[in-house]
Length: 246
Ligand code: SAH
Image 1 (cartoon, rainbow, N blue to C red):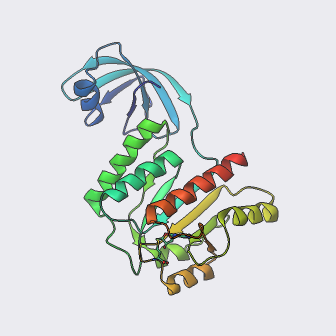
Image 2 (image 1 turned 120 degrees about the vertical axis):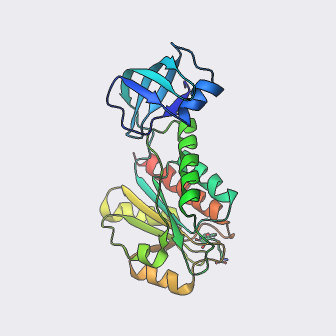
């Protein structure tokens, strides 16, 4: 795969100027020269073959040659609502979620949770998502929403969506809930929301309220997982089930 660069705006002409930080990286770190081939994507689902036309200090002008729709997404829209862990673990989780095909992350305020990222930390996480997207070949960005209270998110009505809350005391497995849904509706779900609590867990009241709003509790095995492990287990399992049902 040629080196991939992210363009912040929709590519709709045959010339693109790549500013910092992507342009800086291409010009200074990669020492681009006129004629060099690169791949661009703009988050719309397409990727573009391009070549370097002009190199300036912190920006590079590129000529677009071809646009290709290349779908490297999961066959379902997967939203992960999670009370994010602290510090570097957030960035690591975002990176792995991009690789596993998660569509969006909604940071949650919960009863027992730690502080959720505010503006500058959210911007850093969104940058981490772009870097992971460049590396793994996706042409759509994982969206990172503003943090919101779990009680509010749990109460949202999302018709057609399968909603799963990971809770160690639950009895159903993800595979069993998936199978059950397939049998009832005859089709794999196209939209799945999963919720993972903080290290202290969801409170009994938070879990009960979610179930009342139609969320289904799922267990992820007999051991207690860290927040990141629970998130990645859900994403990998649902991704495999969805890929299998293509
Ligand atoms: N101290 C809590 C565990 C929190 S682990 C307790 O004992 O209940 C952090 C989050 O990861 C949990 O809120 C849950 O959403 C998820 N999780 C961890 N291990 C899990 C498991 N075995 N099954 C289902 N969810 C799990």
